Structures are given as C-alpha cells and as structure tokens.
Amino acid sequence: MDDPTRPTVKRLSPVPAFIFMSRWLQLPLYLGLILAQCVYVFHFWVELKDLIGAAMGNEASLQHIFQAVAVPGAALPEKLNETTIMLVVLGLIDVVMISNLLIMVIVGGYETFVSRMHLEGHPDQPEWLSHVNASVLKTKLAMAIIGISSIHLLKTFINAQSYTEKTLMYQTVIHVVFLLSAMAIAYTDRLMTSTHKDSKNAH
Image (cartoon, rainbow, N blue to C red):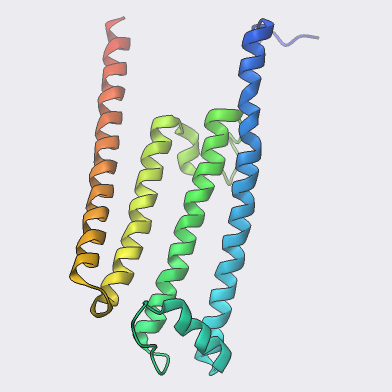
C-alpha cells in the first residue's frame, strides 16, 4: 500500500538520468580518501610509538625522532629535549587536523555531491553535517587549512634559528594569504545568503 505522506519522485528521462547518475563516479575518489585516512592513522601510531620509545630511552626510536624533526642543514640534537618533544607533538596534532580535514571532505562531499546518508536523528551525527552545503563545506575546509597552516608556522618559528629570514617571511605571508582567503570565502557566502533571503522575502 502506498504511503500518502511519501513524496512522489519525478521520473527522469534517460539523458538527464544518465547525467545525474554520473555523480557516482566520485565514489571511488572518496573511497581512496578513506585509504589515505588509514595511512595517516598508521603514520600517527608509528610516530607516537617512537616518541614513547624515545622517552623510555630506546636508541632506535630516539634517532627516528631526531630524523623526523630535523631541519635540512641543521645539526641533530644530542638528547630528547622539550623542543624536540614539542615538535613531535605538533606533528601529531598536524596529522590529526589533516585527518579531520579528510573526514570533512569525505562525509561532507559525499553528502553534498553524491547521495544523502540519512543520518538525521543519529546520536553520532556531526553537528556541522546537519546544515552542510557547498558553501558551508568550503568555509569549513578553509578554516581547517588555516589550522594546519598555523601548526606548520608554529613548528617553523620554534626552529626559527635554523631557517633564513626569507623562509620565515614567505611562510608568514602564505599563512596570511590563507587567512584572507578564508575571510573572503566567508564574506562572499554571507553576501550570497543575505541576497537569497532578500529574494525569498520579496516573493
């Protein structure tokens, strides 16, 4: 028996239906990003294991940590110190933030461009996913990129003595460009939203 409350789905003609189905070509891309996420999880645990091993005096873990935080042309530290630990932890945070960025692209992109996931009412539904669209996703991604850029800039300034002034200046300028780009995206989205609301009110 048909449900009268269920909306009727308009049947598409063959060409529009074929074009609309082409959105499923993006599915392998999102599955590929899930595999990239697995690589980041593995990398995180390898770095964390080496950090714990270095803290306990394991020589192989210690050398791996020094190689991981080494700046080209700079001398390797002789022992595990606060700066080295901070650089490793910032690297771990960087991995987590990139992982968050991947989740936003995978879940938000699939929901926006491929198919609904029907997570309404699910206790673990991300807060941002309830009102996600292409504009919101762009703004979220821009903010995530700024966070990642901030981590990289902080790592550079902690090792500032190992970099040239030119490198420090360029990294700062690039970070400012990211900030300005995010502000421009947010401002443009606000203008478009207010214009859309004004046009609806006018009707």
